[in-house]
Length: 225
Image (cartoon, rainbow, N blue to C red; front, side, top):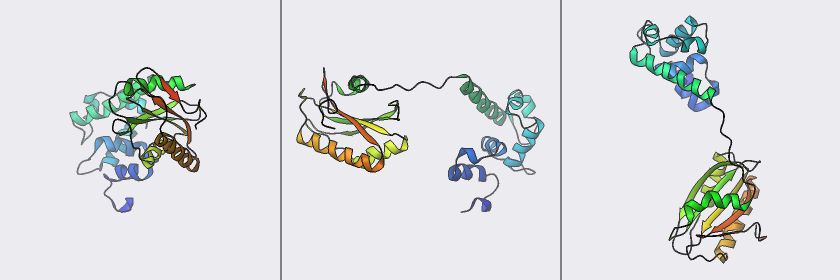
């Protein structure tokens, strides 16, 4: 259904889903918080009225009290609190620095990230760490849980998560509960498959680690990637 055929109160949410948050006007963003208007104004029209009263300035809006906001028809105490809560979240976000993502400079760095998850398991698990072009960690995830000596991984899911996180590189890892660091033929085969798939999607396989309780093997350092 086209946005223009929707009720005005529904348009901001639909527009958000179809076109993204950056496509919404200030009034439409506020209307999503307000949810519904009253018998004379839709939520969008009410949002425009409120913003006009503060010269379309979010900082001015944040200075209003619950009592100030409830003077507008259609805004009760609950809606007023919701509006001011959203503005307070925005203020706190603006005051915080963007956290620096951990940078992987060696296989030891990857080992330090995944060792706590894999070291003491009695069955194999397969994990992936997704990184940007500067090798800073974007996300990590467990992709599968297997048996005592083998875990299967769906390569489609691995690369879906890589693309969802806008990763340019991926490091895979699994554990060997036996403590044996030697890669199996299956380990070598899945590594080649993932490396080949990554070339097509421009997501480079940077390394594959086998992790045991006390140590690890890096395929990259062994020339196996």
